[in-house]
Image (tube, rainbow, N blue to C red; front, side, top):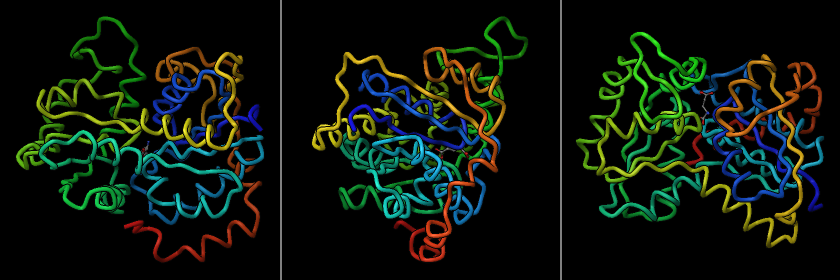
Length: 308
Ligand code: DGL
């Protein structure tokens, strides 16, 4: 089992920020990553629909010889983590609880901000996760839906002299207008006196330098990627399923969208060249979701959305 891969998925490229941390923390582990680019973004969708995507992608990944499943998307975690844990035979981890834990450990004044997609913020999953860890921490949240498209757009812009664009130390380029919009989103959180801000969407670490500039140096940014990687390492170690760190990993990347574009942009997020990206059609992806698994969706129609 130790030679089996870690399965990871997201609506697109953002989850590669998590995959990158997992590859760093566990260099001997092979990864199988699926980016559901054809159906990105998940954020504005109904959580019931996203929950069906979780079943479909989890089923596909379960057929790729995996020993662990990582939902590297906050929206999909809010929608379907509990269901996925019931549905699949391997341990399943999302990114919300690790992010909440890192924030609770980091905050000094116990005022934590969370930004994410509409789906994630409206689910209340972060507030619930923080409350479960420390009921004395107050959470202030705001949906920042346009950040996903801005991060993706920033990735598509080539590095080089570009009129009207600001380059700073962020992983991606952002237009000057970003800052005005970001201030509108983030100033209310700043006024709440937060000292910690959770980047509750796996796309947002691509914008972290720009977000930091808006919230100022006294607010610590938290991304759940590192904490998630640590939790995977601990679970695999306890199960005696860790690959030795000196083993050469074999990573596989797949997308429901444009494979060539995924390889080009994804390599920048993953921090290493991504070769041979597989194209998985939506028909092939959905073919693995059995009637039994899809029936779980009906059982979870109530209660789970609010993970709260
Ligand atoms: N990366 C996804 C998340 O963490 C959001 C992107 C999307 O809206 O699809 O929530």
